[in-house]
Amino acid sequence: MKKTLIAASLAALFSTTPAIAQEDLRAEMRALREEVQRLRAELDAVKKTAPVPMPSAPLAPAVAPLATATPTPSPSPQTAPAPAAAEHESATSLFGYAELSYSRPKDAAATQATAGRVVFGLGHQFNERTKFVTELEVEHAVVSADDSGEVAIEQAYIEHQINDGLAAKAGLYLIPLGYMNESHEPPNYYGVKRNFVETAIIPTTWREIGLGLTGNTDFGLRWDAGVTTGFDLTKWDSTDGEAIESPLGAIHQEGQLAKAGNLAVYGALNYNGIPGFNAGGGIFHGGVAQKQADFASPDARLTLAEAHARWTPGNWDLSTLYAIGQFSNTEAYNLTQVGNPYPVPKRFDGWYVQAAYKAWSAGDHTLSPFARYEAFNTARKYDDALTEFGYSARPTEKVVTAGLSFKLHPQVVLKTDYQWFREDSTRNIFNLGLGVAY
Image 1 (cartoon, rainbow, N blue to C red):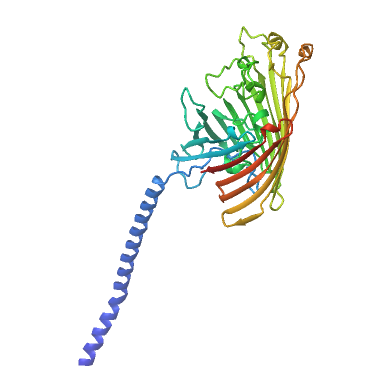
Image 2 (image 1 turned 30 degrees about the vertical axis):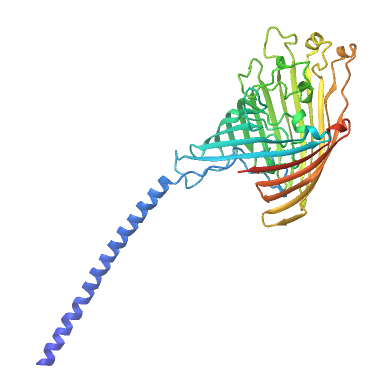
């Protein structure tokens, strides 16, 4: 009897075990579903608060910076939309650069040290396609009526990515001609001072107000085109030597109440499809009389063109650039200035070749000696009518610059160089410099 009762009890117990197990399993599954839903809600909340990454620089230049040891095809400023970014997300970032220098010419009394430029940049990414970029530049440390310093807005523009290979921009922005105009931060070029060709002929840092398009192709070609404000020849002062130091630097408008009676157009191409190699060029053309009724040459025009190439085999960094500018229809104005020393030149041009070698590196530290030879003439030719009054082309200045760049970090550089001037050796000068970009 006892055996029968025990057997019956065991049978009843085991008959209920599957039901209990199934109920426990269902409870665990419900708990797992609730946990997954909770985690999904937390992930969605994180996505909504995560900022869109903001680039540290306003716009990728057409080519790799000149002081980068091994350039690759330049990144497109029109990158693909970030997959994790939600629409209308935003982020703000800061960037900038600074350069300080010590210069000792032959005349020791003219030795100077200066905080040449300090630039503060701010960028705001409204969403993955639209951003705003602005830069404020302070030159020579102090700005007042009695000082040589200057404060200027270097850039202020909106850029919108239309698709993966095309972007549009509007505002005050850098013109994409030459190597240095778009990539002029101190760690990006060799030498304490900017080269003469890209300051005296191409007036770096050169910006205009306008509308522009930038495109990139799958085979490494970048193109730029736009319509902008231009130069104002009515500002030319034929009694001031500044006009002949940099013809375009003397008449650029920089977005300051810029006369816009005559607009200009520009176009540029850069090929970066071969690793370590770049070649390209650009042109800028427009009227410069700005429809001023009292200006003697109302049809005066300017054309500026340049071509460049760069190759970086191994530790070498080799580059060259040629630029030429030409004023046309300026005879009438020049004839009103006869007797003054600096009439408007008909043609001005310059070129350079440069070689640098990364001789040593350890971690972030690099040491690169370099040498550059450049020849430039800011008044290679005058209007034929002026030759009757004794005006003739100025001599071509030739400059050799040799020095060292020592980088503590890719964005922090110490520089030294010496410059020899062939035509005017009194300008020979020793330079020390400090540069930083962030």
